[in-house]
Length: 62
Image 1 (cartoon, rainbow, N blue to C red):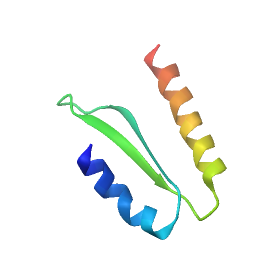
Image 2 (cartoon, rainbow, N blue to C red):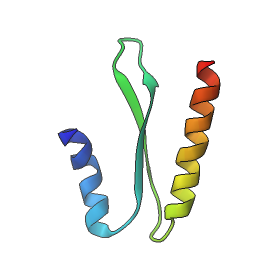
Image 3 (cartoon, rainbow, N blue to C red):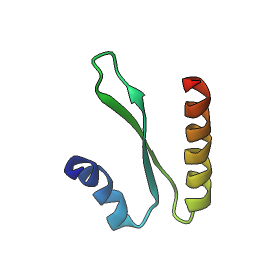
């Protein structure tokens, strides 16, 4: 968790929205994630992206 905070901290200082979410495991079983950084005041767009990724991930796990 500490490393994830380090990845987002610079963007938080700049006041831009960031979304980080897990998307699966690699061939070694290690977690893989995606980070998306948006423009200022684009929180709704980032949340929509995160929702779409989540829905797509659930659909592929079925």
